[in-house]
Image (cartoon, rainbow, N blue to C red; front, side):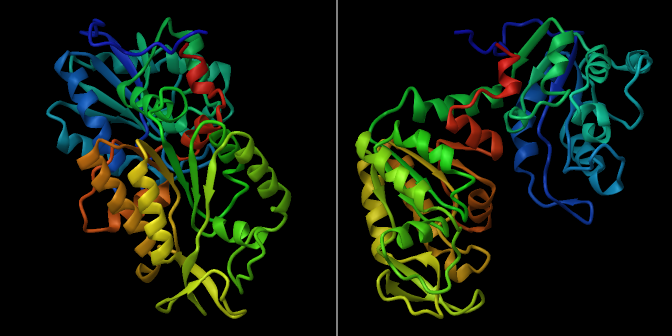
Length: 396
């Protein structure tokens, strides 16, 4: 089986034009960056390439502008941040990508950077167009994909561009993501526990089915757990559910039994009549018809803590409750604290993924320690399913 080609420190990059695909897709509000995490993660490698006197052309996207230019999705705030935080000249290119682009970039000196405007402003990117990919490739000597989070997409700057550049590599952030997920699936330290939350089974069913074969425990939390409670015969009032999941859950239990995987669902929960109130704790067989489950309860938290204590590897994706109201973020933060404590004191391998999970962690004033915090979203889940990602296949 072909292996992914990773960028190596031994590669000579001085005076070479590096096309670097990054994920700088950060949340903006009134053109101000709300979360710097994705940008900050890219800085060490960027600084290293600058120190080695490479000429760097950064490609990234922001949001989904659907092939049309829009001020709302401009990378201008990201450009300003990079300019302030990198000790070199950083330029912003807002023009077209065509046959003249390479000559326009001839001013670029060793250790300098050009950031291209949002690549998704171009239809050729979204359509994975050959001609557009060829024009993109023509501006550089080497291509490095360090955007794992985009690697599940067949888009020109991720997929087709590699067809027209001889030297193509995966960057250090991408490598770290793959190694983190492989530590659950391939090179695992048992026992392995996966905590899966969020609202929909349908978005994570293939992940759960793949994990059942590879891990020792699966803990189901969040609104997703409501469907499992109904399957077990509990009445859950007006709690959020996803219709048509009975057969799916039945199959999960069949597979879990076959592969000796333990599935844990909530024994108690925090309930309320609406999303804005404080909650009250109830066991799962005593929920009234006008109540809804909005978080896990203390007994369930204790059970999860016990499983984490017995584990050597933990993957966590998806919050345990309705984190938009801090009264129902207790379960999520209790899980975060326990995983962090075990990572710090017991050498637990901990991989945390999912935008909502990371958002809850970032909102907390607590300082957490995890082995790996993934910002990859969809690509993270698809790789966990065991899928081949188009952006990785072309780097093999």
